[in-house]
Image (cartoon, rainbow, N blue to C red; front, side, top):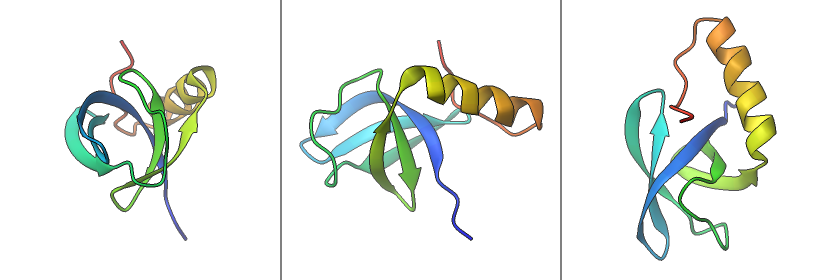
Length: 77
């Protein structure tokens, strides 16, 4: 079973690297699989790679469900 989580892009650190917020933890993530990622975008993260961009409304819904279950979630503000 694989787990991929939505994370909010906090800063771009290079052409293929960014910093995201994962449950209050800042994590470096590889953007090599995506184009046109901007600060504030939500991306789906799996094993250190951003796999796809996620619609912000859907990301918020997913994060709300995780919070309901007591799971740590990225800051959304």
